[in-house]
Image (spheres, rainbow, N blue to C red):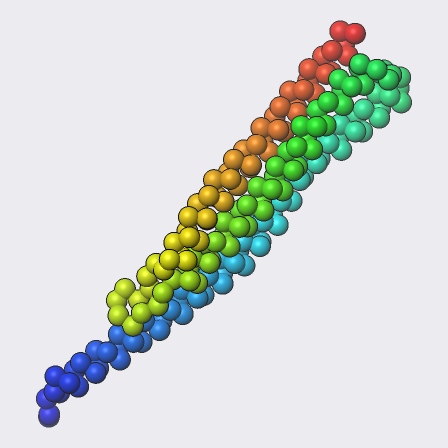
Length: 175
């Protein structure tokens, strides 16, 4: 049996390292593609949820107001204004949820952008931050924070709207 020369060993190690790097590059590309797909799916699901919660409350309020007017419990004037005021909160909740989900999409998009713009190398570490990937990472954090704030704002708008509904109904009983 012949012994491998140092040059053959170095070539063998180089090829093994290259294969590891190619696998890592492929994994990173697959990760970026899956995140992009998830971003679209998450945005759609979350948007529907935010719209359903606040939009459903709006529809219920409109039906309730219609019944009150139809039964002549309230007429035009301050009572009508008071009972319709919560609709602004529910509409704001829908808008905040929709915007929040848009920012959630941009968060995932930037994470995918970070992954796809990292520099690739044949030596370990096989992927490294690049100037543009760092910018994507910073943008992803900013978009994520905005999405969280808007998501919380949507929930807050729903809660405030429900409190306003309660107060408006209580004022009908007092009037």
